[in-house]
Image (cartoon, rainbow, N blue to C red; front, side, top):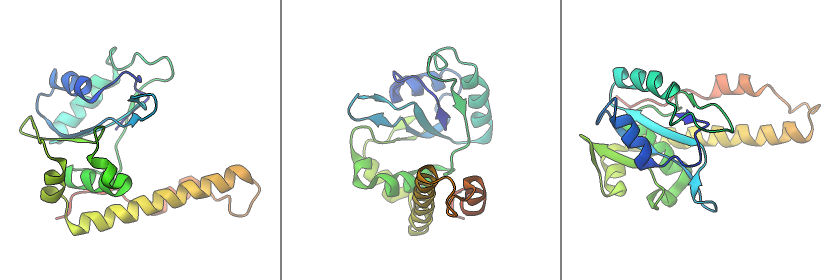
Length: 178
């Protein structure tokens, strides 16, 4: 997961940048867009096919002047909650619903070639168990967001619980099912 990216970052541009140092070493790329402004919201999700490529991406993208050109913030490379192609697809399908099949949807790749039909990729890589786990994860995230709103409105409320404790207790990382 990349945070703090410039609004100009596109899926195509990010893939091109990654191909310069780890060609075809990813199978999932998602650059969420602001539907009103038609620009990136400063995030990107990339699933690398192996640990070595992910580690290399961390090193390169952390110091990449093209990616780090945002005056708003310094980009950061972080580990996403969903790890692996199937869990990533399940997470975004549950979170976005059928909107995931629209134009700013994630892109899936097999051996460096973009899979043209995202619905086929979901059917191929997402199991019922992955969907169930993604629904649980998204539910926990929504509950955390609701608690954060309560805490903001009334910081002295007894419901103002430490969100970091909730997160640590309730947010296990999703990984491919075995």
